[in-house]
Image (tube, rainbow, N blue to C red; front, side, top):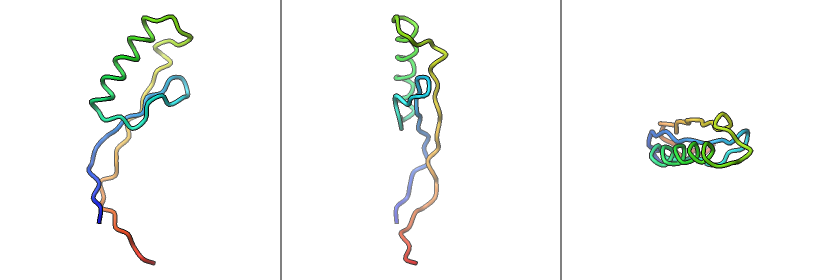
Length: 68
């Protein structure tokens, strides 16, 4: 039997492309802050509005291997 811990993780997108996947809340905060600063300070084809993120919750159920 394998128990999955309830935890949230994050995906960060630049326009429609996922640039960071499955970040812990701590890593998300760091990456989100850095990306927003980079987009605002550097001359790129991207604007701050091109950044988005999605919070995903891991399932909180117990998983067992079943025989059918």
